[in-house]
Length: 310
Image 1 (cartoon, one colour):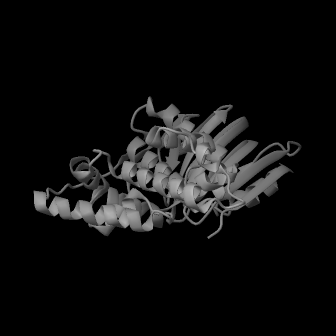
Image 2 (image 1 turned 90 degrees about the vertical axis):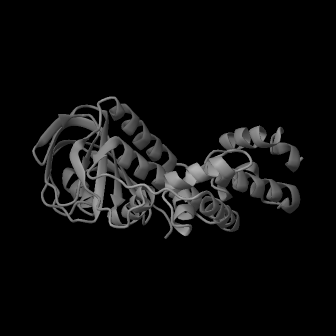
Image 3 (image 1 turned 180 degrees about the vertical axis):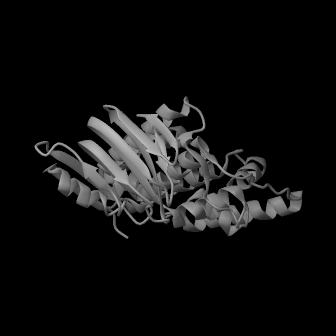
């Protein structure tokens, strides 16, 4: 699915409510009738990002079971209440089948909406538990110190969505992975993930199979979780194996980055397409920033990628 982008500026409260009800069907908004509002939406089949500027009060009751929403305030104050918990401004989550009320004045807020299907697939691979159920013990982060981190990640996701990098499927799936990890690491997941121990020969076979998977599919929007699923391991287990067997001692994400840098180098060296630029090549291989790509390339090969184009 191609990404979508929508910008709705200077809309009234009724229009804002209509737009947001696409994600929260039972949402109701009450606000100042003479105030104009704005809502920006970006996303694809794995995530939706919402940036909203408005004021008033929202209520949402018993929303569907197929989405989890992370919310954070960038400016202004937001008082929220969800399933017996309450807070002010700090990031929080809305879980499926929950009810929530928010009251606020002039506000700038961001939200990430994650469909449960892809999120559950990520979590089951991360925890190595095919029976894992996505449940949370509360709406707040595990600690108050994690609140600013969650807000920063959501804000960075919004910035990325507004850039050309968001058009790359590799970049979008990496963003989904980061947001899913933030949700699972920063909020209290119910239950205890299990862990397996493998013998050395089995670990070596899984390393070779996972490395081959990454090398074969690095041009596609695959993640380290895809590699772990391919060899029937959790993400943490595969990281441990890679650190033990990889010649460089890197983890799975390091191997994937190395493979994509090598492919980008090959394209710059041999392809020399007339319409290629460093930014084009970087985006094709999942690096959202040309400057970051150049930094990683220089660290890997000792020279910048521009030397090849010259």
